[in-house]
Length: 446
Ligand code: NDP
Image 1 (cartoon, rainbow, N blue to C red):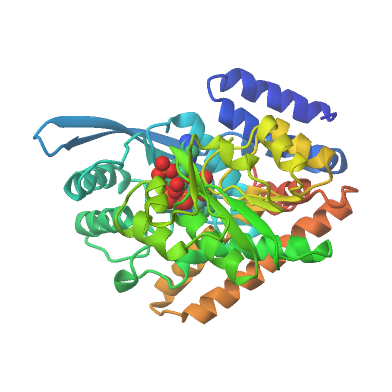
Image 2: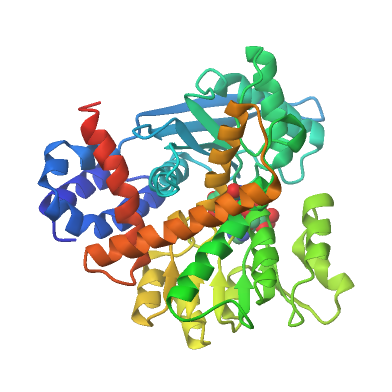
């Protein structure tokens, strides 16, 4: 990074938020891409856009008390970071995972600003969650937690203010409990959450949207470089919502997906993943991925999730969590002939891993563009709720395909415009940033 103003703003973030390494990592990556933009646009520096965009408009931290099945009081910490509303109401998911703290929510909220902008829909950036771990909890415990969480959150959100959605640990069950509590507290049936069940305002194709969208984006990137999914071997990590529907769409596009994982380990099935089995294990029985091998004797299970990237493949789609591909994993992928990494999870590659991709001329589809399909269909769910109307699966899926195609095109052209052809990470950061920056400048110092 050479622009003096960006260097200074980044230094102040590092000083002020020194205890938030993931947030600093996300800001650094975006600012490095914005170097040529800052040089070309002194008006944005003058308007204080760079200082303002790294500071959330509002952050709410709250106590979430609930009673477990033994009658004991438990206390978790809840978060909602309302990062930027320049182009629309705050929008972004709720993560329920023991690793959640302010720095994780801020990195996710910051990324969300640019991702939402790329979708072309009017959505600002936000994110929230809690250090609550739904794993091993009964349905009744999850319900009591969600009700307590929403009792406080409901004071700060609304269909025109802030519309949360799912993320790690927050699936259909959790969204439904939270929606029920919001409705009861506010006496209002509105589109205040997305990812809702189909019987109460959810959109068809929302469940599939992030995984499908990832493959649509990846397909565009492959096509632009003379390649396709057809006949390719694909490694996917994770076995949650994003991973499952990425396996489904990559397979439909002609690839063979051979791996999936969870936080304990990974499976390799050289015959191609049997997705019906994974759906049953993960979506219905809530079991661990290692159970897969008990019904698939040809498949292997390995303890430890990072090893998944040592499996030879053509295309890698990380769909689990942040920083899951480090430098060593990236080098293993490159050495085994992988030529394309496209991100379903948020910030799954460390900065050193990204350097390895570029050094090996690999195609690299960054998360904020490649996984924007989830929030795009959430935006379509908001539109359907406002219209009191529902589109068919094909209509929503068709719009999703168009959006992902357009996102790839805008990353591609922004990269070319600033002399960085083929660098879709820079393209995504620049294209996502410029729309928000123009809106912030136009609205004055707020
Ligand atoms: P799920 O909770 O449905 O699944 C998460 C998967 O990742 C699980 O298999 C989980 O394993 C694994 N995982 C979680 N944490 C870790 C960890 N620390 N180390 C290794 N594996 C881990 O979440 P989603 O599929 O919804 O989300 C996956 C990623 O995609 C996240 O980065 C999320 O932010 C991102 N994303 C999700 C969107 C959505 O629409 N859902 C939209 C855009 C991005 P285990 O069960 O053992 O925890």
